[in-house]
Amino acid sequence: MVEDLIIRHYKKSDYKFCYNLWIELTKYHQEIYEDSSIGGEDLGQGFIEHLKEHGDESIWIAEVDKKIVGLIGLIVRGKAAEVEPIIVNSLYRKRGIGSKLLQFIINHTSEKNLKYLSIRPVARNLTAFKIFYEKGFNITGHIELFMDLKNKESEKWKKGIEIHDIPLRY
Image (cartoon, rainbow, N blue to C red):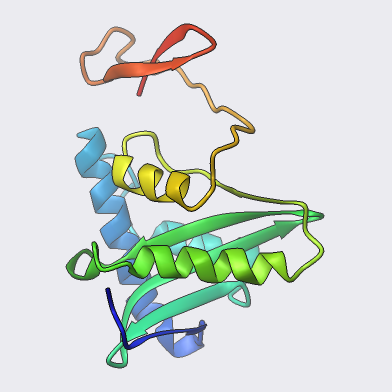
């Protein structure tokens, strides 16, 4: 566990560090999906788009020894909110930082007049999935199904998820 963790609001001066965290997350997604096309040419573009669409007022930063080691965002739509994104620098994982960021957002949203808090991890991020489950995210809302138009029968897609007795790949 990290004892000297500070969680604070995002500042404009955090941009470069957060952009680089987004790149790290995108590279991790490329790795777990074995797909270098994820994220396109600019792996940090998702962070730019997130800021444009949602602004920076709902982003919080995790700091250890004045170093940015993670971030978490919150998108509020009416009476519901979604955690997006949640990123912890790979050198600081398994120290409880992601859990503390998530608990911070759970506490923050509990103080508001919101009805639901959701989170949408990518299916192959089993570590994140387990943490989210342990934090109380155990109700299934929407399920996103998609079809790989280029590799319909590819072995790239893992078996092992079943919903309503229907086998799915991820």
